[in-house]
Image 1 (spheres, one colour):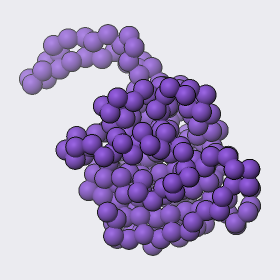
Image 2 (cartoon, one colour):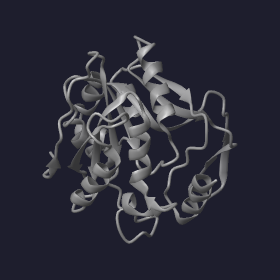
Image 3 (cartoon, rainbow, N blue to C red):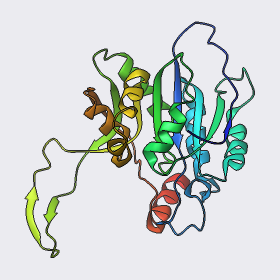
Image 4 (tube, one colour):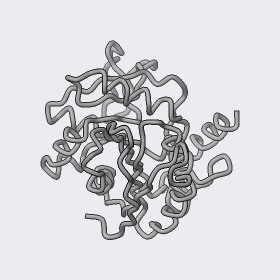
Length: 252
């Protein structure tokens, strides 16, 4: 469990509608980026990387609670950034930030954040801070799609694979060309029914730790997860080359 936590509890919605809680995974080290510090705090197009995701969650009408999994040792800095993005209580688009310590793996960070989601939140949005180009409209579209599909456990942003896929052996030689038919590249946000996501994270620890996204865990637990085409570019910041591309898109 996270050792550091700052909580501002949300009031109930006046109309009694379901709350959606957003979890932002922001505990990455930034090692592959060569940032010399946490990736979430790297300046991207004039603001810390995580601030772009916080702004998107504030713009989403469905989101009333945001939980940020912070890089260990940087919780207070993340709390300040989350507070700056939250808006005044009662203001349109305001939300209530909660900051927790991230874990050793992405799955552990999501698990720490998930533990702080209020019981009344029937839907949970999981998003990687490393994807700063999303907006509130995409979040709301995913939440609406899940609400309209009662048999589904989740809906994720994704796009069909466009590149030709090659299987490569140990010697670096191509051993096969794989069919792209039916293959989609998963992204975030990923939206789940809260009980399905909790059940998925309660599975065997090794299986959870090895997961590269939350849809993988929900699928393994037997949940039906749908894809929703992402309407615009949604690249993930991993390398310096990615940084240049993402800044150009944000500035454009």
